[in-house]
Length: 221
Image (cartoon, rainbow, N blue to C red; front, side, top):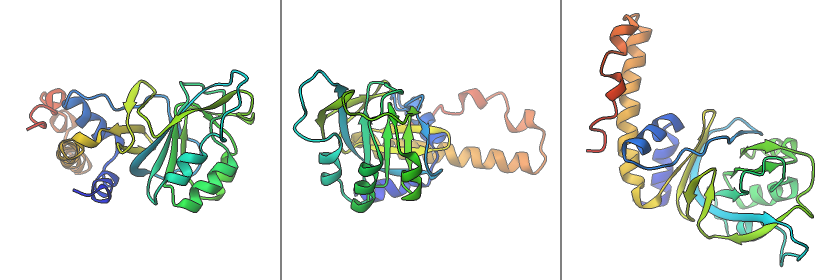
């Protein structure tokens, strides 16, 4: 299956169904503490990574994020590993301008960002752990890009997939993507039927019966 096809199927799901599917397969994927800070727009795409580290007085060879943007393809999502530094910006307005020009679908970080009004003006979804006005200069620099990183405790590799919406952010390993999608689609179908029964007025004790807690059982097969 092509990357575009995987991203397309992922975009039809929500993070809750995908998180449940990941758990049913024994995988970690929910990146907790990250939420939408610009346009409220769900996004699914392939990951391009970058990792930041604290500035130690040695100038970086380039400004953070520039290599990731230049390498990104339309529909990619730039994922910034900032070690949970919610009060330290690892993304800003000029980077957002470059990202939308390249067709980047979104930016996700476990750290802080700034210039969110500018990102919203560009209709660029940004998911972050915090919003701050201060610059990254003199605080953090890029350590690596296009290498495996850890984001909010989740291991993420370039080429993996990410889904972000109003409930949060989940990462899907590329090598398990079809398996995760299949499980998530089955879970979503079950919950859609349950919601329809609830909307039809069935008693909730019957809609969410004794087997609800074990609903994920069998979804890995």
